[in-house]
Image 1 (cartoon, rainbow, N blue to C red):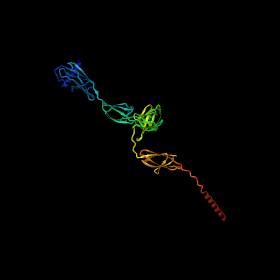
Image 2 (cartoon, helix red, strand yellow):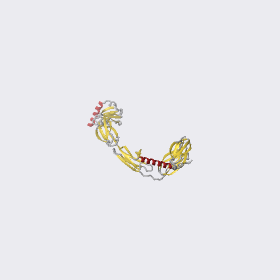
Image 3 (cartoon, rainbow, N blue to C red):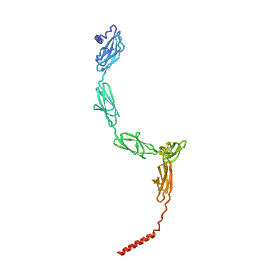
Image 4 (tube, rainbow, N blue to C red):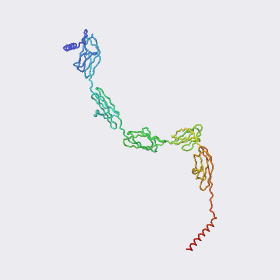
Length: 431
């Protein structure tokens, strides 16, 4: 009974202090009992102040015949406000409980730092905090300098703003400190094409400088051999050596199909005559060794067509030669031979060389050819040279007759000798 009396007195006092609550007079009265974990919190129904909690609760009287309330808000400085819905109006003489829990407003924030790669040392305003990933807690709101350090990588810094009650996320993507070494590559046989990380670098033997200190893929290619691959780890300031022993491919031959426009051209493989291209279809060179070859297609009145062809085992390579007309020329040639050879050649009295010899650049027309050879009579002929053609000159040289010494001077030689002897004898007598 004493408790009910005290509650009644409190309600009378509250109503006396809150005229708005008691304004709707004329019906039975019930109560909302507001429970709060914080004393001194202000309670509002539908935005209307109802009182302040004391001892963890507040009684709010309402009349069953009055206007009902629908929302409650409880607030106190330093805490997050609580809002919620009120249960229906309590019946006359009854009490309905309403619970409101206030959460303190955080006055600190935090930073969550990560790095790629992980394990970077994290410094806050120059002070070491630990290695990433890392959470730095209990930070007052404000601006901070955050730095990440890791061996072999460039340091990275950033400015971070910390807000009360919030976490700021920072991710450092570190850049490696570039270091260089070298790779020396040889192969057997040499001349292999070298690729590093898919990029052509040259042919063996080869030394690559300024190679980033890292792991690199090396590939060697050479016609007629299997591709060769390896991985090399380059260290700063160190030269790595790679020696590749290439394995030959099976030696089964290939073939080359040759087509020419116009048809009927002569086909040569590595300088050796093979045949003529047919008027329809292709000319096939069979049993060609694996490797690189030179194909030449030649036809009178046209410029030669020459190309390089790579032949693989049991495969057919293709050559299509579109011949270009040879340029028109007003000069021809003279092919000169002699028996015996070694004769000096003069064309229009101009020395040209020694037989046998083909003389190019001779103007079209009539020319005099003379051959001279020691011990043989000079030989002369006239030759007609046509533009773009070669005239032939063949000479059989006649030996010069051998001359015998004359005997008619012998008596005179004897008489002269006797006269000289007589003169010498006379001089001696005078002495």
